[in-house]
Image (tube, rainbow, N blue to C red; front, side, top):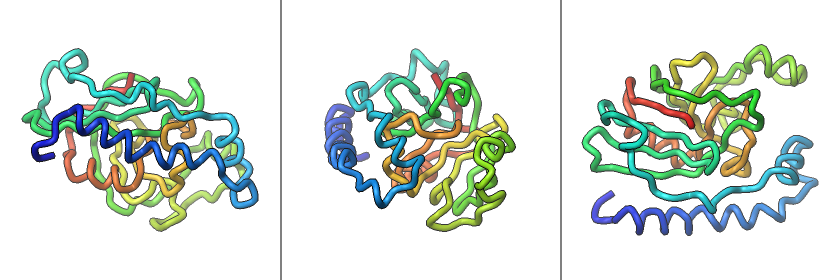
Length: 196
């Protein structure tokens, strides 16, 4: 991150994400699906808690790097193994407590251009969804995905940027595609992950 301080990074990050957030309040309902309209109406962004954190209260070390996902502030924090890199990203989080998993896990696989298969419970709730979707602009996993040791849980990109900053996912943590691309390049298999 060069000579940027954490404070200047947070301020720049807030500036870069605040414009899309505010502009989303005028989403044209004719151009959205029913679920997207519902998300836009009922969910709000939570940038008030978007602040830098220290890794020490959450991890005993930074071996392989560390990712902290804060469900309340809807933010993902990344620290490199040498602590030289600290990045903070707005994220989407699960839309309900039933879909939310908290605790410690790790990155077990990294996939560029992931394909997507809805989980059995997702298909039960949404029987009209396809059983498989190849990589591409309609893929819900976006451009990159970090697979976690918990079955069905991922940190991934999204092409639907309205979901970022909201409780809008089916269990995964979503990032803007440009942010997951950056995080993908910084993480490795074995990166520690904590969801709180």
